[in-house]
Length: 370
Image (cartoon, rainbow, N blue to C red):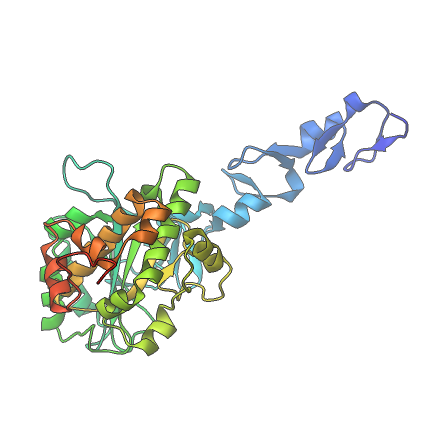
């Protein structure tokens, strides 16, 4: 070494490169490397201990802590974001959440996020999972009402929980755990749930507040991140290409779409739509919301307590996903609405019936001469 190098921590002179250790762009001597550095439990990188965040069981570099963890507001334990429970702006570990928060309430805080339970039918493999948020309004944010809906939904499995939502006047948000489309269709008691909500005086379509949001699990859209991005870009392309039909399907007004589910704008290259969406200032208030880490959220649809409209929406979202997975960009560009409709699974009877009611069902593809 032509010049002396000094340890960033103790300041001792290092005359030989063999005596130097680089950690976080700092040069350290052997003693400081051994005594003043640790390995991050999340990423496995070595870091200077004074720059870390830790508790009795976990030690993390600041990047990993900032991106993946919270500290429990009660016991100050470090908790991974997937295992964090929220009450207002306060984060909790599961144990403190159960102790500090009123677990007897059926209406959870807006930020409540239980560990997801994934439901599918026996022998189902390689399925996509869909989480549903159905907003209901007009009959109060009452725990007694929530209990009745909760009990209706969770007779066989705990498939649904309930949250408050500040955008609703006198209502609540019904949230499903992620389920395969066939579990939603055949096992999830949605018919009984919407009937119970109606009996209690709730509305969903006939309000200015309620939406029906469907979350699609990103992991089921491709084996790699790149494949997932390609499928997501084609989902977005489908919404832009067939906006008029989907807007009619959605039952929303133009005003509510602009406010809660705005479109990103058409481009004949799906990847360009995705890149534009990533730079958008719309945030989550887009027809296809990509701001969530684990899901893609479809927000276009107006709320409904009519079972046919509800189930048709889920069947439509699954059909769009299947379309985006199976076709490439060129095939998507050439596909007409009629082509798409003809490819809908015949067992999706609620969707087919709904399309016919809305005069969106096309029996034959339209030729270029037509």
